[in-house]
Amino acid sequence: MVRAGGRRRDYTLGMNARPWFADAFDARYLDVYAHRSAEQAQAQVKGMLACGLLPRAGRVLDIGCGAGRHLRAMRRAGLDARGLDYSADLLRAGGLCGVAVRADMRAIPFADGLFDRACSLFTSFGYFDDPEQDLRVLREAARVLKPGGALVLDHINPGPTLAELVPQSVDERDGARLTQRRTWDAAARVLTKELQWSQGGSTRRWQERVRLYEPAELDALLRHAGFGALARYADLDGSRWQPAASPRQVVLAAR
Image (cartoon, rainbow, N blue to C red; front, side, top):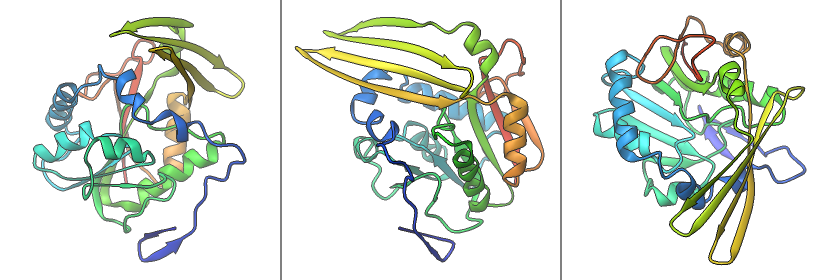
């Protein structure tokens, strides 16, 4: 139960089975994605500021902030940045007490119209079995934005990504072996990654799942959630988006 805009809300995951993201984002996540460094986040935030994806001042919400690498970079840049994430492990690992809260992104525990900008970075969108739940996330993002605010949504561009999809990869890392198997369900529009981490005689298996949205589908979903003018870029540096070549789509959606 969280408080948002002065109203009390009850919200449950609404799933019979334990959702994949309840297990995927534990402390091991930081080992798997160790190449996503604080230095990289610092450079990306610098690029976002330069191209206008982030304002030079104001309140910013990082939705799905994880251990806070972008969140900390935003705060170092002088922004009043706050975060939320469902993973207690990642929030704890990032030392984000007082800066970020543990919450479900479908029920953001902040008041209406509080933020100048909201961000969903590094494919933190498309996590739910029902597309209506993705829409709920966008509606919550719109609710906490001021009139004239905007959402930065960093998502996969399906066409180029699926064209170059690697079905399986194996990486050796300091005595550990990471095996990743990737499958695409065209009917459900869901990309699944099965991961296996083996180290010191023990093995852990889990999965990551993300629903992919074509640009036109994502635009329609954003408009349905209450967003207006849209701009699309190839990356967080504001580089020109090429529909058939850019593996990502970074959308700036005005409230």
